[in-house]
Amino acid sequence: MLDLTTEPEQAQMTGPLGTLPIPLTLDRSAPTPLHAQLAGQVRAAALAGTLPGGTVLPGSRSLAAALGVTRGVVTAAFEMLLLDGTLEARPGSGTRVAAGVAGGGTRDGTGDLPHWLPLPAPAPLDGPMTAPGIHFRAGVAGTRVLDLRAWRAAWAAAARNVPDGDYGDPAGEPELRAALAAFVGRARGLRAEAGRVIVTAGSLSALGLIARLLPPGSRVLVENPGYRAAREVLQDAGLEVLPVPVDADGLVTENLPPARLVVVTPSHQYPLGVRMSLPRRLALLRWARAHDALIVEDDYDGEFRYGAPPLPPLAGLEGAQDRVLYLGTLSKLLTPAVRSGFLVAPPALVPALVRARALADSGHDRVTQAALTHFLKGGHLDRHVRRAGRWHAQQQAVLARALAPLAPAAVLGGIEAGLHACLHLPSRLPAGEVTATLAGRGVHVSTLTPYTFAGAAPNALLLGYGGLTVAQIERGAREIVRVVRAGL
Image (cartoon, rainbow, N blue to C red; front, side, top):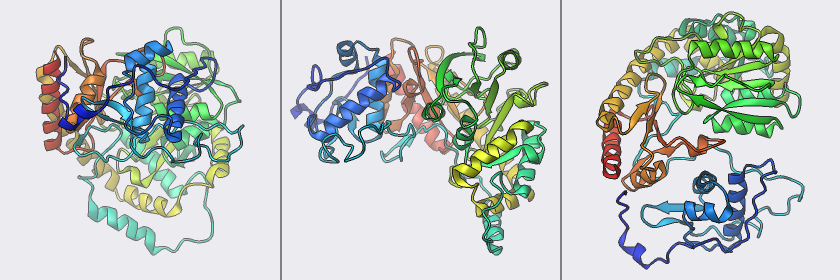
């Protein structure tokens, strides 16, 4: 068992409730996931004061048993409420209602909005890192190797030209589209004409445009575990989202059901980090042709590989041009602050996607596009990718070396590429308990529960290292080793 040391003042607190003193109704036939239903009802009770600040909630196992659901449903609900501040957790004192939550709105937390208006759960995005310590946060890349002189010069060049009164091409400025097409050819071996490139505000922006092309209620397949924000973009578009298992070779392509679209991360699966094997990629293309479907390839960090031989993008395989929509992002290469990415689409789909972009927001910020064009055309992005690749390879090597003493009891996976890895734990050591203990020691990691849409979540820790220094990685990894060893 883990050593969950309590703080002195916690001895005066009341113990956790055996069950919640509020009526809870979970409807399995509703489109809202069970964990979101549970989170919404607990949040409403906390806002209304029915669950006062400081109330210690039941343990996830006992509450799951009382509700007749899996423990993962309760854990996912608690994690949503921890992210939005409704709940707080301290090692050794359980999960409790945060102080000051009551009175934050009307009794139902909705104000005087129409009763027919559905209020979704908070966006499935990580909030700001307010807790002190080392945050192994996935999806984050540092800017330590960014050439600041070239960066400032790019923005200075963009500022020299006073923008005119035109919104610009909703597909993106022609020079930037050409520069992105050339870059993806050099970096990923994907031949793409500028006319097939659409500048976006990132991968979720691109996915939202694609969702507009599908008939209402269309079935879409997603990886499980997978990118939770992408799943909710598709659900919010009124599509039927069906999770498909992932194994060591990526998305399991055997017996895939018919669908209009499938969304995959083949270069570095999010969050497990595995690569889709070439036979699976070819099988997925055959499935798409057989079922008249499209494939979305989210290549969010495919430029970073550490000794593993590169596999061609799905979009670059023979016969893929009319079936695969390729998503690229500059958030992992440069910084999420530029909110820029791109979509390489089959030629026949470009007009519909450009129309969707025009109706969504008229296109991307032209000043940012001008700066990025200068940065790409000057060769600065290529040089930055090379520097960043060497930097991230050093981070990856430090993490792998520091966690090596845990093998074979705990296995580090997905380490050959990208900016995150997964530490798979033995079943006798629950990832949630390890996460809580590490948080008490100032090391913050995530479980895979929020990324799992069906079935039991893999018992693993998600370790994003792209935004950390080598020293932080070493310190954090040492704590992970101590905590895991104590629980073995």
